[in-house]
Image 1 (cartoon, rainbow, N blue to C red):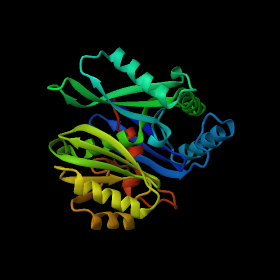
Image 2: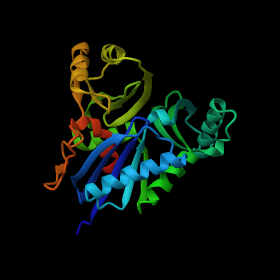
Image 3: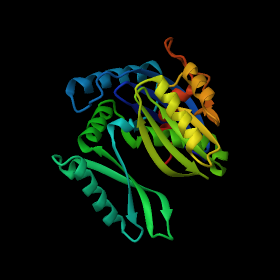
Amino acid sequence: MAVTLPILGLSLSDKGVQAAEIEQDGSSNTLTAIDEWENPAADLTNAAAEEQFVERLSAFIKANHVQAKKVSIALDTAQLVLNTVPVDDNLTRVEINEHMNWEIGQYFPDTPVKDFISDIHVLRQHPDEKWNEVLSVSVRRSDAYGIQRSVAKLGLDLHILDVDHFSADNALRLNYPDADKKYLALVGVKENRLDISLIRNGDMESYSYSVVQSNKEIVDQIGALAHDTQGIRSITAYGPYLDKDLLVQIRRASVLLVEALNPLRHVKVADSLRLADHLSVPSYRFASAIGVALRRE
């Protein structure tokens, strides 16, 4: 008999917090709570910022009768260190980690490597040429501890600490199973940043980002992605800065189909769900929060 497990998913950035509670019941998922609020003080190593975060999250939990005791959190890529490098395919995991630590030391020569927590993901493999492309993702240890300490004050256990773009990727895979048979681009639209990954037959084969300063730059960058990336069939967009008008502009500038990611496409919505008066959902704004709440590992 399947055990019902409510998970609270949070997507954090210096712009805001997005929250979604998902009730996992076997292979079924149900949205039971959702909201977002501004987060002007995102540094949870700061006592005042931590107090503000805890107070606002507590209010969300009470207002929405959240039952989850586990919380999974997606961090903004802008708060992390993401680095893609080529490595020999005969290196061990330990040797790859050592190489990535060396890379971090080049970017932050005055910060001890032990102050970062890192993970690696193999992207493209080139067996004929005997090298692999590896993505390293690093978070400052103090930031991770600040998050863990903050949620613990509300009696919550930190379940998963993830990256917002990769959480949206999870929402894409769960809600669009046919993505495993396509070559597409996933684009996270933020006010000053685009996160871009190329996914071929279900495998992420590249990650990159662009700094943008205006809606025109967002539209132009995505238009260039559609025009210049050989072989991709479509673009899936999501993000807290994306809105209907911008989506229309992006679609007009693209030679490919641009689809807005719906992270609730195969997720039930509870009859008891209460939407705050200020909340107008297009659901693609919540792709990262919902995607991290849907994670099961």
